[in-house]
Image 1 (cartoon, rainbow, N blue to C red):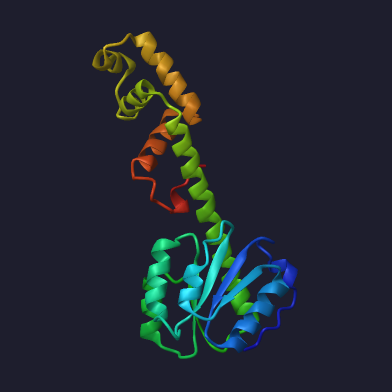
Image 2 (image 1 turned 180 degrees about the vertical axis):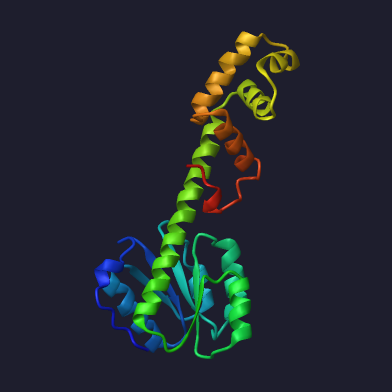
Length: 226
């Protein structure tokens, strides 16, 4: 495996980024550990799936370099499990056998990249860069979801009622009639909703409500608010 990288520091996405390596071959683990450190990321290597799964999630951008041939669990099965439980951690699949059907299955299961050994350090570094950037985007989106959730929880019961009717398309007069309060009171609650939710416009508030209404499980950064 060729691991020479010309300008390591140019590739660094984050000094705190973590690159997990799961491979039962100690020579591969040592080579990847050295490469990851040379670029400025933090490597964490594991020999078995059990050891990796026991390790807590990273709270910073991270990715996993995953070998297919593991001693305790099929790499593809582990990939499927991780892509669901650790969506913030992209997976780079590596194998010693060129297998197109396997590559297709891995990509469909959620792998970001599929590399066949031996591969160059440059190719792997580029794959890691992409993975860490994607992880960063997902974590940023998750933070926005949490911030929206916190804002929503700060609303009073009446403010939540007003918000639901506002995003449902009702006018102030209609909301006042439905809730049995004055239109002036509706306007006051509506202003509080916009302030507490930190929404700059009605369309933005509607988008927030739609995202929160999905159950807060979405992790797609493409849906993130600007």
